[in-house]
Image (cartoon, rainbow, N blue to C red; front, side, top):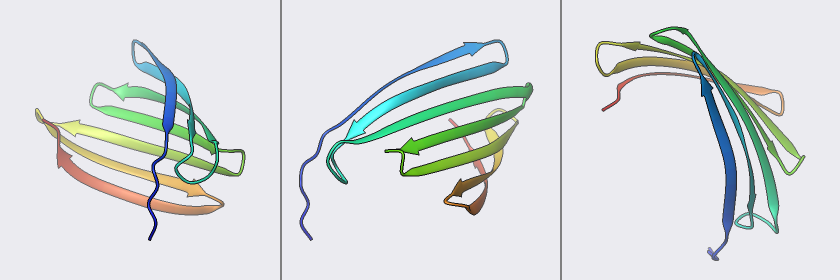
Length: 102
């Protein structure tokens, strides 16, 4: 396989206000093809101090769109349970995880 060098640049912003966070980014990369542009938008809301809901939207060169929705519940000092769904081209994938953050 032939591996070539590439360039990737992303600029974005995130704003947090009380229990709501939202942001976005625009990126450009030539790793996969010439000058692929991406746009990402996200928002999260702390429903409870230990429960956060997050939505994500990713547009890749106006060809593919990825939608994601997830929830994370934090317990103890470092424990969490996370579950989500991601949709790409009408196909959904589901995930669930349990872990620690430190």
